[in-house]
Length: 257
Image (cartoon, rainbow, N blue to C red; front, side):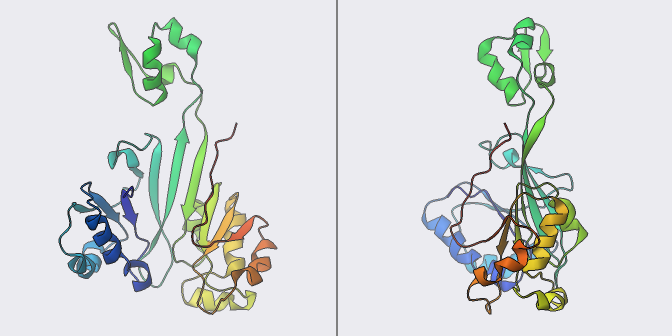
């Protein structure tokens, strides 16, 4: 019920056929807030059969594109921090596809002494820390007047289905967490992966290494892989902080001190 948006990477059946059940479940649970859907080009045409299966819903379904300069998630729901952004980037698969980068910017450190000098009441300090301007008499005080230089934020990147490509490497630059598809486990399956618009474990690890990501989770395994851990050394040899992703896997990303 807390979902604001479904961000689709492409329109192959194994990535969209679960939508009718999910969306009908949201309806049966009494959802009234709009549900946003984004994806690559051709979204309305590709999703028309899916939405027909969904039928009537108690909430509005809104299809939107992620702007080139990113989407401020607070525009979807005010509960998001003003610094939370979603970016989409093109990837290389057999059909039109894209991955996503989620960033959470971190404002500069608040300077209480500067706020006092400007005569800003303490009960308005929080507004400035959240990026809002405040009025003090006839003067407007902007956040940059009481905040230091912006600090390093957080970045999470999801590759979607893709072969190795520069857009993915660029998007994953310095990511705190990269979840990358790794359809094939064997090093000898590199060309097979390329031919089908996918990556093997080693190729995904090379992307993480080249992009400077901090941690890599592998995902989207072929059905021929019964135990991903068997092939983990193929990735860990290239990028040591690699983990085999699995359902329910969680982590907490922390700002640098």
